[in-house]
Image (cartoon, rainbow, N blue to C red):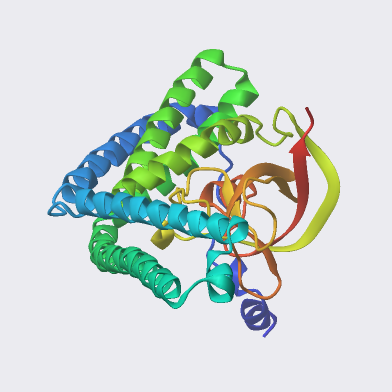
Length: 334
């Protein structure tokens, strides 16, 4: 009877062996497995890139349409400033109504109507180009959905490789093996390059804008990712501290544009927050672990959650699903 009750009360303890701790003796196996999985990641990334090239010119058409819409918007904005300045400095319409002859009033009305027709043409141009861009975006989204199915094995292999890498890096640091740490740093670089390539492949029709946003964020991300669990160089706490739930982005978001315009890459230390200015750096901690992240997106929009981390961020903090975290808002110290 006692045994039966224990079996009911403690089902997780029956028939399950505790995982054996990873030790330095496992390093050869870990590094060999990491190399094998990294090779697979690169093969799958190349396959995804070849699949992306079969978009039928969608990416080129999207970038061209986007550029033409921006140029049309610039023309309209310049015209709006011109009209505003003219109206502010020379209130011709009011002057004509007060003192001009009927013939002069007629000419003024004709001129105003001609200006309105010009402005209407500019507005129509914007609407047409925006509609073309929206149609291309719908095509791009459908194409991206097909690519995501093809990318699933790649994203799974990336996750496996990152877990192996984290274990190997911890052991290499414990052994203070500079040679092995350099080898693992090269492995990390290969995985980072593959992750960026996959992210851009899953961003069809937005490559030009995405690359510009990535270039803007690169200097800060380099500092954030070099910091490990410490404060990034040149950044310090502001005294603003938040506490609450943290979640993380799933693989289905890879390549989606964030609020900053950069595509979501699960292996970069970025995060989403509802109100902190984009470009803010935060340090997130839980149970003795910490990691810094760049705010480049908005969310999460779930009660009780204050921050949405990238997969790299959640992995650094050792959680899946949702966890309670402390968020320090940082600012440049220089």
